[in-house]
Length: 255
Ligand SMILES: [Zn+2]
Ligand SMILES: [Zn+2]
Image (spheres, rainbow, N blue to C red):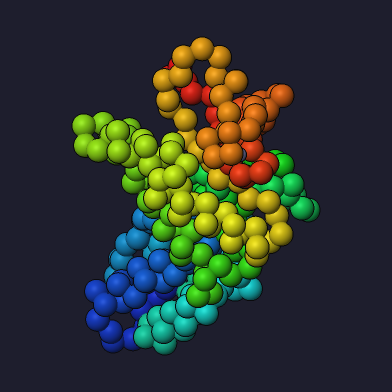
């Protein structure tokens, strides 16, 4: 992933604390437009200068061409109040080897998947197994992708509960691994809509930490009860895939 630096000089008499809040709002609009990853960026003010370091999937994720209505409006507001222009610079990468997210001409399918620790896109490419920047999809809702990101937050909240234990662990785990849970329903609806927008089949990742006895490969799809084991494991991760229900899963490490 890339780390970008966004800076603005305050060349006007303005309430600096208010400007920082406006800057924070711009960061949340960038997130909603799919241009930045994760939720909290390092942001600081020093003298007449506000600086922020968001993560992005591509070097040019903050390109003006990708901005949506809300991002443009907020940039305009901040630049007017500061009487100066925002400046952008790529300052580094999270890994030396990192190059790009998914660059497939056309993905065979997408997977909606996240976990408590990642800041990658919640949408991955089934062909190359890399992140798909949300801004590559047509706008999902109100110029951006907030409903997808809201599912992502819900999933991360459940995964955090089950990782921490003690509070709601069993409930959270069931949200993640039961196909009929509220979390899965929300995720499946998102998959259907992404499919509608992109014409690319979109699979829902169903977590699996159940205690199964015996050979789990014989376990049927939890939705349609058909055989859904894959002949060979996909991307060193997925063992089950139902093309009818569009769900994808793994062998439980807890068997
Ligand atoms: Zn790809
Ligand atoms: Zn099925």
